[in-house]
Image (cartoon, rainbow, N blue to C red):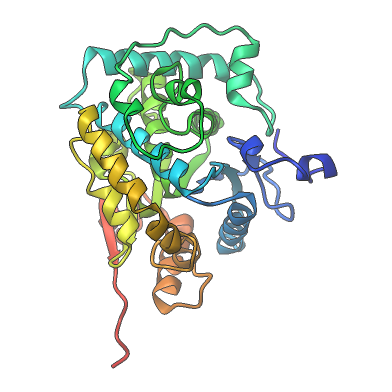
Length: 353
């Protein structure tokens, strides 16, 4: 069911070719344990970086082993990743209960129908979700929306218009469709298996997680208890609680460093339902991409390595200790965890003087 050791041909695959693949830590393969971690990486994180993060999660839970699976969100460069993030944020805004329209509801219904079809199969760890759908001639109607404003964006990443339109308005969730659908598929499988499901995500991974959870909620329809075994832990968050399905918010804890400017920028993005505003937001972020790349690409206040305690920074150690406690603790009875649910925890760097 899960990926084992990779063969030499698989190791030579490009970063983009592994978008939406399942990754595991070879020394601790999943064996259908009652707890399952589904990890989604963030902006500018390649396969080797996510494998490092998965290993860190394995060691955090070594005393009470859990299954740890990574859903890989491939990087195509920081500009492409930032654009994907904004497209995902724009779609999430349309799913807010107070902003949902018949058009956005229809899109969500379409995604849920697609997920239902995927869940009737057993997908290999290296399945290309979109090719899988197309090879089975699954017909999903697309919605016609105006591309003119998006076409006028300056300095768009190197992708074809057909690809961008498919990400925006085609049959699939905006932004990062492969990892989004793969995560939704794995969440459904874990819930059906009776597992306690921890979705652990960083940066853009939280946008992917929020979209996947909306799709899963639509998939389960009138079944009200689907989210009870679910826990969402986000670090370096690029979302607000309003981006999540209401039933999931009480199952969520977000962790953010006070000086994490990337998380702060994305978390404060509001009112991006208007494409003209999305255009301006995208242009501004792309113009700042080089500066953000320096922040994202180093052991900064936004890096996954800081939040997972891999940098030796005291605040990172505190973050890792908290994540470990959340992964091992009882979310239904532990008083500390209960008090932290539905909150964004702000980490502070303490001046030794």
